[in-house]
Amino acid sequence: MTQVNAAENGIITRALPGDALALCPPLIIKEGEIDEMFDRIGRTLDNILDDRNRQGVTIGQPRRQSGGLRDKPRHILKNAAR
Image: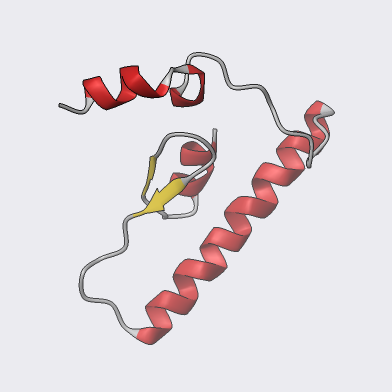
């Protein structure tokens, strides 16, 4: 849902493991465009918070992530990187 909300606000993102999100700004960017990017990120986060509130999700309580990297033993992750 985060990527969809970001795309609706003109922000290109890519998911990372856990609770991280990578932004993909252009390589050449002006200061005003950086300000606009952060304004759009703020609108995106506001939209997500509004959606969660409408769904009755309490913000601030961590969700249990299943099947993600956090559930894998470290030796499996180390071997997968080779």
